[in-house]
Length: 458
Image 1 (tube, rainbow, N blue to C red):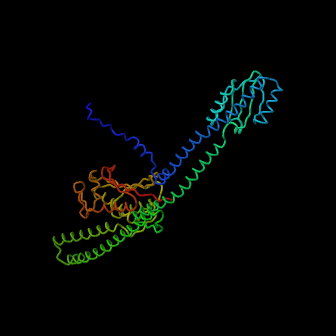
Image 2 (cartoon, one colour; image 1 turned 30 degrees about the vertical axis):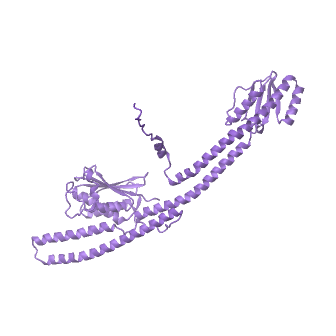
């Protein structure tokens, strides 16, 4: 390979991908991680340095001192292995060394060791005894709280030494760990309280925005929290006020347009009724009727059913009402009700209008329409399905069908009275309730309309 050209190695993106997957999703968890992780790392470093430089050094010195006293007692007994000498050694050890010495004649050392969580302590004592004693020994740091049991094999039996643990290691190390852990817990608790208060302000802003999107009022909402969160809340309130003013102005304008257009349409209807009834008169009546229908449908789409209040409605009662209304229109709807009743928070008349609009479209393009529902308890979602056996809509054109004034003549026969607002109105109503309306292929071969609505929480 030429010296002037260097092959570029591919960039490894493993760690960023892992961090992205493992990093907490919620703001509170992320802030806590940012605050608590450095504190924990710092305290771990301090603890490591403390144990490495101080605790182990002090413990090693204490263990060496204890091992030296035991080695002296063993050597003194070996020089004169009689009971009188042992009593003399025992008395001196108890008075000046805090050691309790007993001789178990004819016994042997235990062959097993009891497991201990203080591995560092056992390792330090083992090293100190191994350096000081020539005889075989055995020790246990777990059997007696506050004491260490050390046994040394001699020709006469086993010399057993019971020593306080503070003679073998520095007990203040655990107090240091306790204070470190206690400080971490206290700091974490205080951080959680303060962070929770700040996150609650953001959650309240999110809830207020969600309610506004569903045309629900939240009179208890007001800006609070950090200055940045307050600024965001105040900006939201200003935006909400501007949108509401625009809606009110639009509704007022449309009401005026409706009044201005209906008056000449009414005069045209009267003049056509009083004029000669011929074929031209009939065609003009159809045009006037279609103009009136277009105005009514456009006004319904633009107003968005803003005036109706939200209420808790029984799903079974809603399905019964819709079935009765369709039956009065001269159609037989195949309705399959839920086995158990539940409630949803909706604007009942608006949802009825959206569902009936879809059902009547199904009857217009097909002969049989099926209306049923299912509940997703895990997601707290109610799904309403309307299936027909008509020609359906091609998958690539289903989203286009929701556009206002869209006419899919190639897919479905053109509705004489329709102006392409039915699906747009229905989706606008369902989305205004925090749900969604999607189109799919029906099991009957036609079009399926699936509406999802959030279930009212108890």
